[in-house]
Length: 225
Length: 225
DNA sequence: GTCTATAAATCGATAGAC
DNA sequence: GTCTATCGATTTATAGAC
Image 1: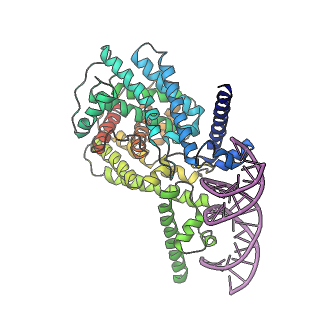
Image 2 (image 1 turned 30 degrees about the vertical axis):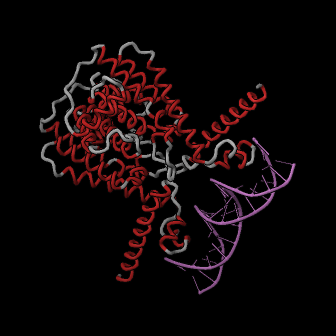
Image 3 (image 1 turned 90 degrees about the vertical axis):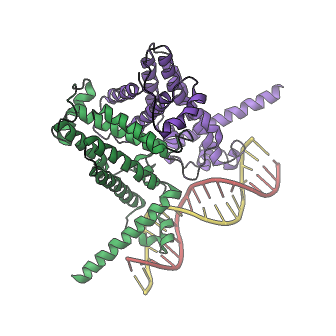
């Protein structure tokens, strides 16, 4: 079995190397990533890359899943540091922002404009919900421990739509909490993307972290934290 | 002068037609727009287009400015309908979302991932602030008419950074109101982009407008409205 | 201001030798 | 699994005739 294991390990390393070079290419080419350029950088023929990824879109999918997992893990790791739910919540938000600042092109890949002509397969759905799930779980903990007070139930059709989602998403969490979690997550995405994509321009330069925290405290307040 | 006027008018019409076809191409090519493809659709040689736009990036810049102006005008027009500041604020937000739903690729162009290799010239800055300015003016009106209560001043370094901005942005508006306006604008961008770029997935399908309004009411609350 | 023609590249994907 | 070679397309941008 040793030869097979070796083959598998070499293959895995090669796969990682291709992805690593491809990630660097995201910086210059954005989403319109070129398999040939990646192969050139690796000193191999473009046709050889097809033994690792069946198509350009498959490579893109791998990068997308990795990015979702990386930002999710950063948030989860940061959240373990806090003692109160609000601290854990804010720590997760800061971790997401810092990951985005460190990996702007990967952020753009998962939260920016859709790649033209690319259709995300089912495999990306679960990793895509990691950060959202973490926020939801944090809020659920706050409700259960009584740190956050129960709130009036939502009215409106979208609340009815969210009720079954709430059940499977995090059992016991009221529909309103799910709505608040999604809203806060969208606010997080908006704040990070706006800063990253240049909407802040020159209005805040020194203390962007402080302004971000101000925004995230607002989102947490709306969620009942 | 009539001949000169005619020439100018024909040129303006041709320019508009090129932009119109280019806008359609945004749908399939995204930001990596091709001058040749546009020329092909117009039945003209690619070299002829260079008489109207010096480069691909110049065409992109024109599209970007048009898009900022279009969404800005939609928001401004919608805001005139409301009677209270909150109504005007929400009307502007809904108008922005509806414009985005009707023109998703132009939205992606201005609020999505930056175009790789494209550097926005100064010309885009003023049109880019139209929606933000409208929200700020609405909030300023609410403060001045006493509809919104004065709030505690901000603390933190970013507040100091925002103070001079507040002066030139909308005189008389406290730094906190400017911060709240920017935060609300980011939340608006986040909610629209998340819906448009597929982050909602299948969680809310029927009443997305209602969920959006829920989010925007939250943002307005945080701003003091 | 429109055309043809061209330069000098790029790309995804495949075929087939080894 | 890597290579060469290839197909059939694409692109930005320019030169020069009319």
